[in-house]
Amino acid sequence: MAAAKRLTQRDIARLAGVSQATVSLVLNGADGNDGRIPAETRNRVNKVIRDTGYVADPVARRMVKGLNRILGVFTYEPAFPSAQADFFTPFLLGIEEAAQELGYDLLLLTGAGTRRKIFGDNVRLRLADGCIILGRQFDPAELERLVTGDFPFVAVGRRDDAGGPVPYVGGDYAPATSALVHRARDLGHHRIAYVGLNQGAESSEDRWQGFQEAIGGADLVTNINAVGRPAAEVLDILLAADATCVFFTELADAIAVEALARNRGLSIPGDLSIVVIGNHIRAEQATGTRFTSFAIPREAMARAATQMLVRRVEDDAPVEQLLLPCEPVEGETLGPVSTQTIRIK
Image 1 (cartoon, rainbow, N blue to C red):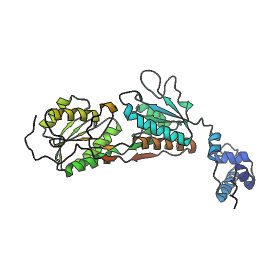
Image 2 (cartoon, rainbow, N blue to C red):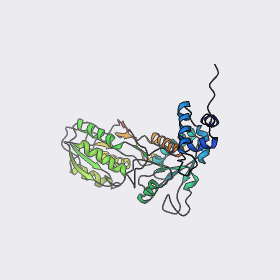
Image 3 (cartoon, helix red, strand yellow):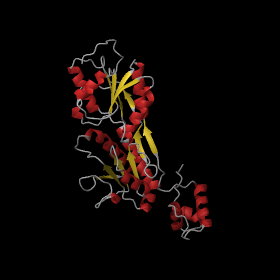
Image 4 (spheres, one colour):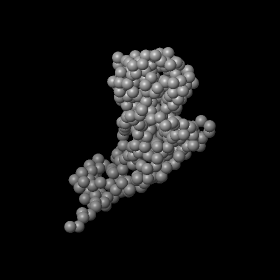
């Protein structure tokens, strides 16, 4: 049995009794306010489309929209090589994979001058059909300009409203952090510490929110609202507070404190349990210790962001906001509270 012939715009035009150009205008959103398409004609074309189940050829629609088939990628921090290369690389891999599947090329936008800016004197943004934006913190003024403008973009990572809702794909950090706090409490930890930023970037705020929501009846014995402080200073504060479990937002800080604790004769997790809820360091800084943590789905976030951007570019899709779950990582640094009461300081 022969396959049914695919309907074309010419077929729709013949059935509706109009020109092919009129069908093209209707399909591409002409509203008729300029008098080119009377309401009766427009309704007749739309009825034929509904009755026949016609679906526009996506390639033809892209040609009509005049797309370059290029997606921009902008990062507020250097992506490679840099101290955060291992953080950005999975994002770039996911973007590249999705763009290739969707038939788009990529254009890396670094901004002009020493301070990275999306909009500048030599902006090349419009060479791309849309842009994926990466960074731990965005420029608020630039983000608002993007939201209120007509250029399609998608942010990687949750973003607060900026003159309107921001299209994004992010990691769902709050429930992932809460789950780890509940695990610590179930293991008998009631004196818990938090080391890392709890404000600023949305990712920091989300982790802190998840931590606070789950701390419950446990005591937050100390909150060191900073990153990169000397390991000896941090460990001394933790021990003075008699913390049995500490949550770090930065793996680099956890590595330094864990190494110093072992050098002082402390057992990890026997004397002090360590949980990591972030990772922004180079791979060569890592140690053999498998920290209890959660996995950020960076490649999946980037793929989803690229797919979302193409929907916005090709179909004028409305703003979407998506958070992907972060899977727990068992690790070896979270254990039950030790019965030992004498600490080595």
